[in-house]
Image 1 (cartoon, rainbow, N blue to C red):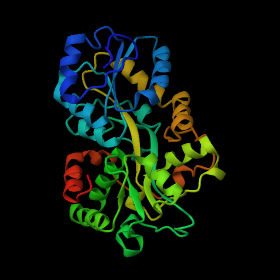
Image 2: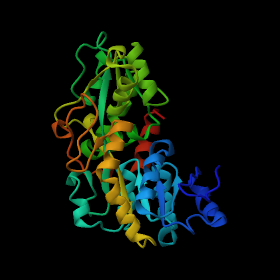
Image 3: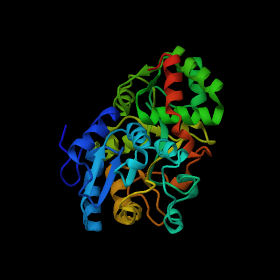
Length: 338
């Protein structure tokens, strides 16, 4: 574990260890902004270093999973040293918003992002977006299904790959619970399990399996395919992507987002940080580096061939309602999928 006494600090810890470590090491005591980041250090550290220069003040960052840090922030309450929470998914932000732990953001900041990609209470805002898709092997699946609900049908037996421990898959299942209800989602998961769905460690492994023809279909986020194409060239990637129509649960658009903690010591700097993450430099960074969708108005994707965000038929859902992860995990365990 790295010692948290420098700028752009990295602390990887379980939720149970975060608070004692902070107290012991004086985390955030000399910073001009303290960020809890559920986004991976390797991904966001370069843009947070640019943020530090933009603010002209020391920035310290605690890294962990979004669910872990959200739980820790709820435990710390008003005693937290965090000013800003940068989350990998909307559900973790929704959990904090539901407990009144986030400050309302200024309307000009909120107006930079479409209302469906920000908190209903105006207390968090999406920074980048990703859509759920079906990766498919065109030789074995010339016509992929138009709904994830169809994946329990006999014709797809043994042909589906997924990553059950991946946070985006779990968020998708939570979204299905919101859209279809718990009973229907539970039945779908059990049907998927009975249909011989194949589990992989992560989305990259799922895409690999589809690319090799090990499975015909894979449940992933769009950007894994675009990263692979950027790396190897489209001619060397066998797998293709299918964007599901008709506002299907499998077409969920989730977001990474940011919120300012209520009572933040460095409130002004936190607000400036939010605006920076929605400015062209940061938005273009996420598009370039992760192939995600920029969400701020006036910023377009730099990814060749990526369908425009407004062309996607995603389900209408309050992303803040994706916070019920424990219930989703319980359902996945019940179905024998994790």
